[in-house]
Length: 158
Image (cartoon, rainbow, N blue to C red; front, side):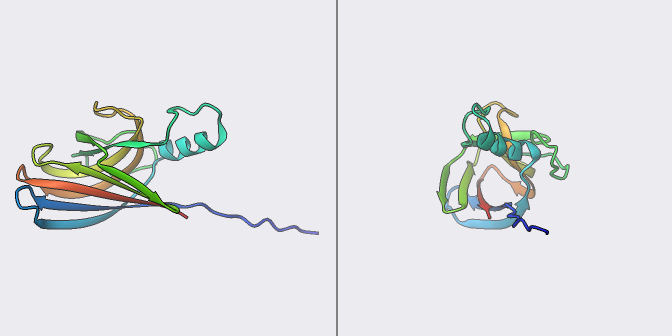
């Protein structure tokens, strides 16, 4: 006699909306949307929080957003951005049901140039490449010193 096991698959999808605004007027100049990955280190950290008594880091709180100029495609083996150029403390974070909303904000003078990657970090500090990379996305945004950049991350667990 065969028995059937109902397999539930948990999926985590991440989408990022990048908004470039004029730093003086706040007028929206450009909006682009991207889909990204949660690399192995991010997924392993979730599993550690579910299955161990002392995961490291001890919190899953995403506390920094970073951007860089690296052009490598996001990959499961990523542990940092390829070429991080700026990072800021997460501007806001909320959650509703199974969706987390995280916003990174880069002011006019925080960074400029052609940005090709962005990421979210857990347990990070202001130092580049610190913390655990939770999510990485390939972007293609040119930002001037007269513009601001807002990255809105939507992380859905289904």
